[in-house]
Length: 271
Image 1 (tube, helix red, strand yellow):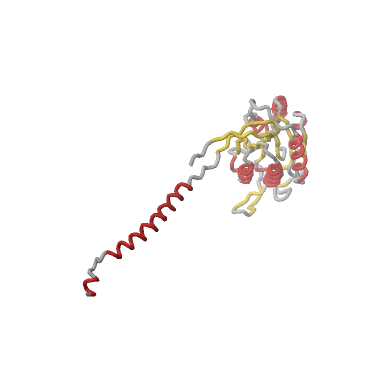
Image 2 (cartoon, rainbow, N blue to C red):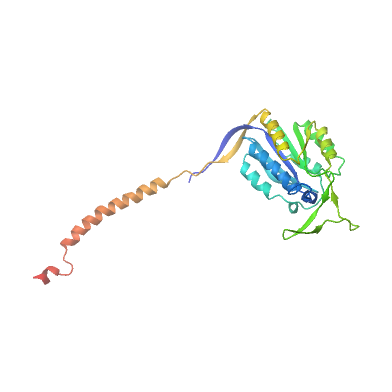
């Protein structure tokens, strides 16, 4: 009993991950597939964060806030593992939607260093994406893009009960081949004075981004946490022990008193 909300001061930066969960990310041109590779990268970066805050956005044809910005890294890892294409209503790769949503993640009252890490295969067809990235950079957000997938591309598997049941086809019945578009991701990074990183080898983006965040200037911010319940069992334990002690003494006296009482006239019978 007695839990309360307390304010804790921390130092760190704000890191938001924008994860592409479009169907093209299911292509297996890198093992195990593009989406799982992207999750591995994010998870390993989160593991290397200190007291920094982290948020996660997923997007395809539209964007969705998977996890608001938080210091709870365990929750971030848990939510990340559940991310999949079925969580987004429309398909496509609308990176600009994710950029717009990312604006709402940062607290303007707290002048923390802000990072946005976009992980995608780059199949974006929106002309305004670079302009949105530039606008975000002008607000102080440092944007890094990570590409996953092979430039030669691969088909998009359709699974049934975990087994491949075919591959996605276009209107002409031809198998769709999805390819990594590094130039799109490079263009977004350049527009925001950021950097594009090849993500096909997990440790490369993990090391690069972790070092950037570690070396960034940390700002102090406040976060709300629920304190643990205050233990009150001692009072009940003391009362229990008191009753046990009383019971021992009272039972002993009661026994002696009962011995003096001849309830069944045993003495008379003996006589």
